[in-house]
Amino acid sequence: KSATVSAQFSASDGAALMYQEVIQRSCEAILQDCRGGTVEEAVKRMKEVGSYDEVKQNLRESIISIFRERLRKDTAAVPGKPLKGQARDDFVSSTYSYLQLTAAKVLDKQMRPDATGELAEAVAAARKEASRCARLAYEAELLGNWTRAAHLLQNRFLIQGLSLREDPMEWLSFAKFLARCRDRQQAAEEALCQAARLMGAGKDASKETALEVELFLACLVLDRGRYEEAIAVFEAKHKEDFSSPTARFYLGLALFLRCRWEESRSYLESAGKPREWFQGLPDERAVVDKLKAFRRMDAVNLHIYAEYLEQLLSFGLSSLVFTFLDQTEILPEEAINSEVVVLVDAKASALDRNYRAALSRLEPFLATGAASHEAWMLAGECYLQLQDFDQALQALQTAVSGLEDPALYIRLGSVLLVKKRWKQARDTFLRSIQFKPTAEAWSGVAYAELRSDALGPSYEALCEANLLDNERCDVWALLCLVHLRTENWDAADQACRQCLSLNPQCDDLLVEVATELHRKDRQLSLAEACTRVALEVKDSGQGHGVLADVLASMGKAEASVLESQTALKMLVEQPDLRKVIFGKALKICQELDDKPLTEALHACQKLAEEQYTGRGKTPPLVQ
Image 1 (cartoon, helix red, strand yellow):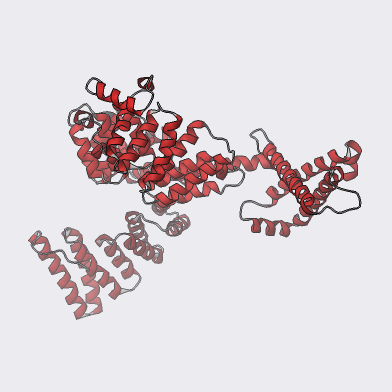
Image 2 (cartoon, helix red, strand yellow; image 1 turned 45 degrees about the vertical axis):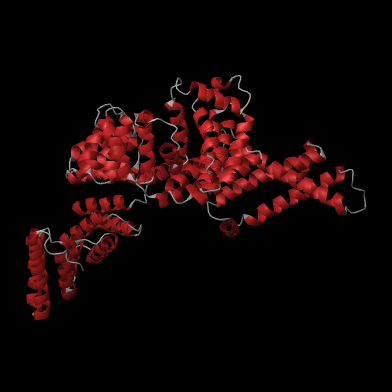
């Protein structure tokens, strides 16, 4: 190979081209023999298939050729004498940089969208995986599963071939997510510092992105009580651009929090002015004088302030929004009660998971009949979180008439499921899928179809959901129910085990799976596992009742009666269900001829009846 190259090119060109070819072939070999994993796992795999030694030898020979050719051309090298000291260090450093840069260029060329072969396939797969992680993180956040969303977004940074860790925009987006999570401000600050370091090292980023990172980091520092540090940043931005309303707003807010109230007021007031307002003003004293002269005549520009506050919300810094609205007294009362400000205030409360406070701001405005669809959507979300499903249904139906948001349709579909309007729920979830296919929406379709006894459409929807996200315990539980009802026993067992392996939180579905397994007299050990996991998630009387039935069928009579006693204590308000459970347990006690166990069972039922008839006169029984 070396002889062929030398015949076509000069010695120096031949070494360089040979190195490039070796890099390309080595990458192809690695991609062919290794599919993910750590570096150690990749090396082990290559040794197993026999490609490691060949790749290593080819790289070694080509690197030696590069060193020889560059040494021959180095003016500091004297034939017959070794390089020493600084000359040696400089030569090794420059050659290493050349090798690294050349390898990077070869990889970059192979990974372009128009590249072909194994590398192109690997890049396409990496992009697909990154898109999948982002979509699943969106769904997890939508469902309030912040831990899974964080895990998915962290995994995106580890995807090989995309260098997402070298993209400042990725770190900025991740920092915003961490801020929305609440109680992860330290991690958000670290993510922003990483974005700043990358931009400082020359990574491409727009001026807007660089400014947003700088403002976000300074606001985060301000929110964490490091006032002087934040003020220094905002003062520098203000000196760079005296007429910038944005810099004035953030500087004014920082000064206010530092208790420099008089100084902050002029900055905050002038932040509501357009750039043209500052023309001809030489310094801050002139700004103060103009504010005093025109204070009564100039109307407050709410939309400018709303933009600043919306940016703070995008940073997840609701406390700074409350500081401006509740303490600075910059906005008059009329402006505070306008829809623009009310909506921002309610969003900040919702961001803090204080849904009642958000509704207290929204409801007076909703009652006027002039509220926007966005306000109705936010109200619907708050009602849903508070489990006021009647109000949530009304609010979301009003919002959906003017907005096309897949998340909105998912929320509405969820409420319709609670209201047992199966057909409407199915259609609503399908509407969401038209805008953005999600596993959550397909799962909703499947649930609605299952409740309508449409097992075929339910199974198809579950398959779609599983393709989008195969780690959803609710989807596997629904698949188990469908397979049980169609008597596809092996598939049902597999789906049930898969569900249990995912640390399931869907307690209602687990109890239903256990009930169906018991009714079909199938895999009672699985039925017991399902009920016990469900009871760990949520301790319920119904769950204990189902567990009692399962244990009885397994021949564990005494344990079954004890579970029945627990169920009776927890089902005070359901006398019909208690009667059924008591009858089954009493029959078992009679078969055992165990008088103490029978007396204890009668005592539980009697106390539950007394509590039920007392309607609150007797405190609830506890286990």
